[in-house]
Image (cartoon, rainbow, N blue to C red; front, side, top):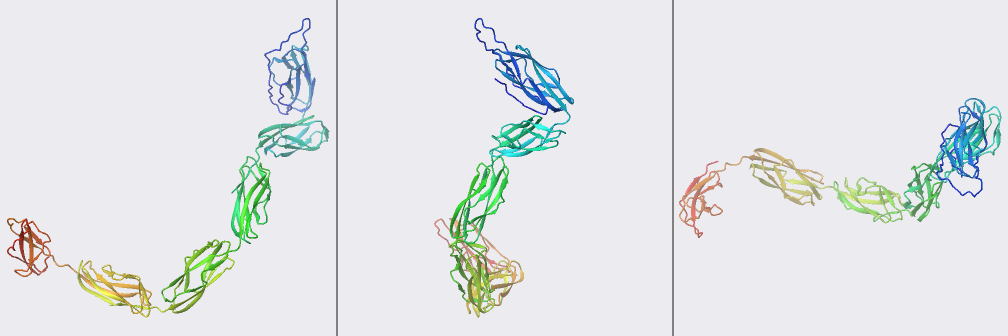
Length: 636
């Protein structure tokens, strides 16, 4: 049985801890009667150590194995080195070795001066050879026989399933030849290639070794590359990572209907969602209708890194096309598929429900309109980019450009004729698009007629004196001549005047008239004026009527207070008034009044009034007139 070995060789001084196994249980056996007990025996392998040339101040470590070859346990009680330049690793003493058990011990040589030196390490135990010697020797030198570039090899992160290599140059720095007798490499996943050993390096000669790291699992791994004679150790390290994972967003690329002969481009994003870098080496496209717009290969993506790729669809014929864009990489999914699909369609064609637009006659200053419908009768979308008229009298509205019509889709717009002078007019409407029959031309024709005139009668209105707060109304009329006239609006310049009796807009045929009313309501005393303007499509628009009026103060308001003595059996009274003494009289209260007093506030200045009262009993029987009372109203 052997105890674990921790470190084989090193150029740097380091403390090495060994697992010490102490056995508290001894295997006891029955010794046959009369037989002698077996003699314990301790051995050391090898029996001597030769460290060779070691640079002064540096440390070289070798291993020896202590073995109990006897039949009973051996207790090692002391380890003593006769030369301080030679040391051993720490062991917890006493150390008990069972029969057949072994333990590894590291012995280090750290020369303090140049030249050969030696010594003896003694192992004291209860073995039959109670003091086992180990002869050690080595030489201190001023410089290392060999140097390595680099002296430490770090591979960094390497994806599992891949490998990384680093060249290491070994150089002989001595002024004599140096033999390389043995070359070893330790650590999981590390390997080496190069010239076979043993070999001899001449003075200043170098040799290149290729060290590779192919991680077997995730995590950091350490190792060493070393020569046993002369001593040279090159520490190795590397970290295995999970391989990269290639994903695409979106997961598929679908092209809408694309016209045969034209192209459409869409983009996708490639992302490495793994924890180590990956390299995309190839991209394979299906068929001839799909091409890559932008992707430089090979493409390396670090962990979490993304790159954009564009795909162009150029259908060669009508119909559907599909397939997979395959990305080949060293990712965990070495062949990632990005589904592609698209449909090629025949070119669109634009048609109109009428290729000729003939407008009805329109007066100069007015307009007339027609509707027109455009339809895409092709198999792919049509984009209308421009619609223009060759004549200024024709215009279009309701067509917001650019406008795209899918197959069989229509759009309706309005064409308008607005003549600026009388006579026949013609032109064409040109519709530009990406349709196969662009531009589409529509013929336009119309006739402009002379505008009519509008007369307002009378041309002025005089309202005279009007009491402030009261109103006075006068009438007027509008008459069209020469041609029909459309009156669109009217406006007054003074808010004390109001227009009524006419609804606008209104169209008057030639010779037709329409009445209107203007009302003057003065808000204050004094003279005022205004103008009334009628806007129309007449040649003399606007037609204007002027008006004047004077606001006067209102007359003084007088009242007559009446009272009488109560009549027996009366529950209410009626009051009567006349303008002639002795009647006739007219009742002026609107309902029976139970009071014996009444105020008449409806009298007029300069008039004389005659009043009588009657009594009404509970049976609603009315008595005769009372005596007459006279009231003379002053002026004002």
